[in-house]
Each structure stands twice: as structure tokens, then as C-alpha cells.
Amino acid sequence: MNDKSFGSKKIFWNTGFLFVEKVFSFSVSFITSVYVIRYLGPEEFGLLEYANSIVAILLPLSRLGLMDIVVKELVSKGSPQISNVVSTSFTTIFISGCVFFALTCLNFYFLGSEKTLKWLVILTSVRLLFQSFEVFDCYFKSKVAAGYSVLARVTFQVSVSALKLVGVILKMGLFYFALTTIIGLLLQAIVLITSYLVLYDKPKIYLKINLHYAKSLVLDSWPLLISGLSTIIYMKIDQIMLKYFVSQSDLGNYAVAARLSELWYFIPMAIISSVYPSIIKSRSNVKLFQTRFQQLFDVILAISLCLALPITFFGEEVVLFLYGFEYQKSGSVLILHIWACLFGFMGLVQTKWMILKGQQRIKMTFNLAGAVLNILLNLYMIPWLGVIGAAWSTILSLCISNWLLAGLRKGTREVFIVQSRAFLNVIAVKPILMTVRKIIFDSKI
Image (cartoon, rainbow, N blue to C red; front, side, top):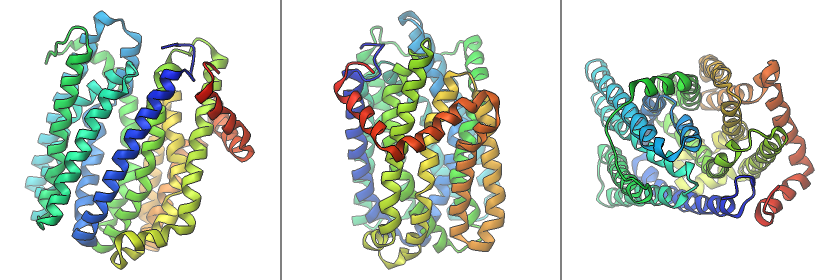
């Protein structure tokens, strides 16, 4: 790989490979979800998504914010240190997952009031035990070796989708559909471990921890932990809060709209994951670093607009066609909630920028402010506007935390200017087309 080239062929094809996999996974997941959502109905689907939202908030806690740090460490460290990075980070996250799983079980077992919901959350929280296996995915990212990660994710998606379709055919209960994700994660973990053993020159996996190194990783990553947790809170807290303000049917309708809106995040994540290792190595050249990030912001923002505009005009018809009249309220939520993608997508890129600038604590502050703002807005807007109020709360909190707050601080004003310039570049269109052309055809930018 040519480290000087953001637009090298390897990165382009790696991005393409990841994108094809994401499109495939998206298609399989989307088609499967249509049948599952129709089968369960708004009330049962709302209950399942409530449990998923609870666990989604716990997932970044169990990962300790280490994933981006691990990628940076694996790119920066030499081969002799790879085993130490992998084993220490894997063991640290595994222990963390076990702790949070145990706490979740104790909390909902003794304090949970609704029996079905209590056991549904406990079953869903088994996902916390599998977060450590993402360390192997970090290793593949650092090597720009998308094929192994793709194989693992495809295994997960195909197995889960197949099991869910079987559940619909056999008319299985709610717990069965929660269990399918656990089985898929187990199969994905097996593929990740096997692929790591094949790719790594010295195929050894130690369940051990270098306490000194683990401490340094956690000290470096804890701002990202708070930042990631805050992000999940203002993307999932609405579904938790809605349960106490609206009917379970309305919660199910909102969950469908939110899922349709958030499904598209695979696009920026595929692009960012592939180009990030190359951007890391461009930090010494300030001009090149800023140019690459500007181009990344431009492309990501353009993609979000290409999604938001058609869904705004045709979202209600799409929801009725896919899910039927039981979910007709989802359409009005979707055409609003989809605009959160603009600031959600930009936030993914902004996070990478601030990590490389050593501004993890500032990003943590921004996301924490966004999470608090979202909760306050939900408390005011849900009783007033119901599910529409929850959608507005998400958009406003993302806009403020992922864009506007950066303009208030001298140290982050640079990324605010780059983000703001992206809006002008997207309107101009030509810079976006030039960036895409260079990524495809040029050896360097």
C-alpha cells in the first residue's frame, strides 16, 4: 500500500469491497426486517426495540471506548508488539463485558417489574460478552484487509436473517428473535478468530493482560467512551423515554422510522473505515491531512443529502408499502428523522478528526452536552408532540453536538470551518465530483 496516497487503488478497492458487503448486509437485513416487523406488529416490535435500546447504551460502556484507539495503536506499533496490543485489549474488553452483563442481569432480575421485558433485556444483554471479538476486526482494519472482516459480518448477517425468517415461518415467540442475534455473534466470533490466526504471522491468542499497557489504553480512551456513550444515548434514549410517555404501539411505529433512518449509516462507516489508516499516516503533512478530511466531509455530506431528499418526499408511501397500515404513523416520523443523518454522518468524520488531533476530551464534552440536551428536549417535546417531538430532539441535539459546538472553541474551530465549507462544496457540486474522480482514477491526490 502506498501510504502517501489517500486515493490509492488498494484503498479504493478496499472501500469498494466494504461497500459491496454493506450493501449486501443492508439488503438482507432490510428484507428480513420487513417480514419480522410485519409479523410481530407494533406492540411486540416496540418491546423488542426497547430491550435493544437498553443494551445499545451498555455496549459502548463494555467496549471502554477502545476500538478507535486500538486501530491507531495497531497502525503505529511494529509487528513484535501486535500480540500485546491484541491480547491486552481483548482481555480488557472481555472482562468489562462480563461485569456489565452481570450488573444488567442483577438489576433487571431484582428490579424489573414486567416479567417479559425483564427476561428479554437479560437475554439481549448476552451481546455484551461478544464485544471483545471486535478487536480482531480492528486488526484487519489496521492492515486494510477488508476481506476477513467482510466474511465475519456476512456470516453474522446471513445466519441471523435465516434464523429470523425461520422464526416467522414457524411463528416463533419474541424471545426467539432476541436469541438469533446471540447465535449470529457466536458464529461471527469464530470466523474472526480463525481469520486472525490465518493472517497474523505468529498465530497466538493469549487471554492475558498487560496491566500497565491496559491502564494507558483506558486513560487514552475514556473520553471516547463518554463520547460514544453520549452518542448512543441521544440516538437511543428517545425510544426508552417514549415507553413512558406514549403507547407501546406508538413506540413500535417510532422504532420502525428510526431503524429505517439509521440503517444508512453503513455507507459512511464503510468509507471511513477504509481510508482512516491512510489518514493516520498523513498527520505529518498538515496541508494533505486537511485536504483529505475536507474531501471526506464533502463526500459524506453529499451522500446524506442524496438520502434525505427522496425519503422526505416519498417516505410515507414507502412505509405503507413495506409495513402496511399498522405502521402508518412511522411515515411522518421518517420524513423528519432522516435529516438527522446529515449531522450523524458528519459526526462520524468529526470524531476521527478529533482523535487524530488529540481532542478526545473535547469531543467527549460535545457529545455529553448533546446527550443532556437530547434528554431535556425529549422531556419537553415528547409530552407536547409525541413521536414527532422525539424526532426533532434527535435532529437538534445532533446538529449542536456534531457541528455548532465546534465553532465555539478556538481549538476546534478548524474542524467547524471544514465542516461548514462542506455545505458550500456540496452546493457547488463540482468539488465532490472531482474528489470521486481522483479517488477512482488517480494514484494520489
